[in-house]
Image (cartoon, rainbow, N blue to C red; front, side, top):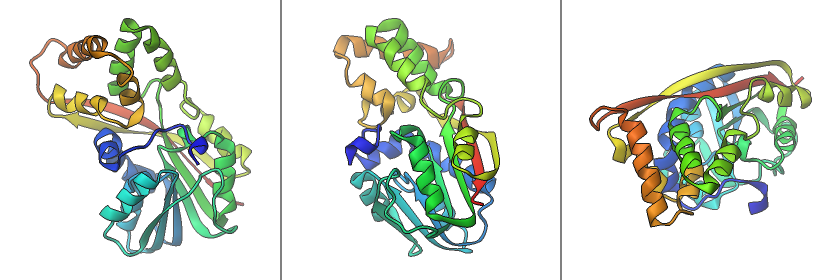
Length: 268
């Protein structure tokens, strides 16, 4: 199943360190934008460690939430940390959903579609399993202009390392990261009443060590690149990013904005 994703998943706890605290802040904004207030069954596509599903479960008027993810490691983490009997998690491929047509009232996806090998197929699958009148909604990072913290790392990498520029290009030009792209995919899938907007969160760090720790982990694009560097090159990158983080002041707390594109549409 690894060919159906472009995100390398090895450890649920490491993913929580790398992205979990971001997704926990973004999830309520996506749910509010989607307008999902009452439902029998809601699908969370690319659920990761389960933060969107847990947010949905905070609404007692949703009877069942099903989260699916290609990574059995993330699914196991989500199951282990889930305390709500209305929520289930299972291994599944966004490009080949195992559910019958019209199985869900609504289908959502947060920070996952950018890593699908065929975004159009994944969205068509979401539409297929959603009943007529149901909502499809998603959020993807504005990777080029909306992720300040990631730009600090990859801009420094592009200046310091031969592979840094190609890594920056790869991560800043992911699909669904530009104005109108999400809406275009939704419209191509035959959805109606399509609306794309932006939502911004802020991520807080207690110190540079708190900021840098995920880069030394195992999950996500930054850690994936840092792992390829030898000790000297890794130290150069760390020092350059630390300089950007400090920005002429003493080490301590910092807060950076992160903007996501959000889209919703209705199954006719």
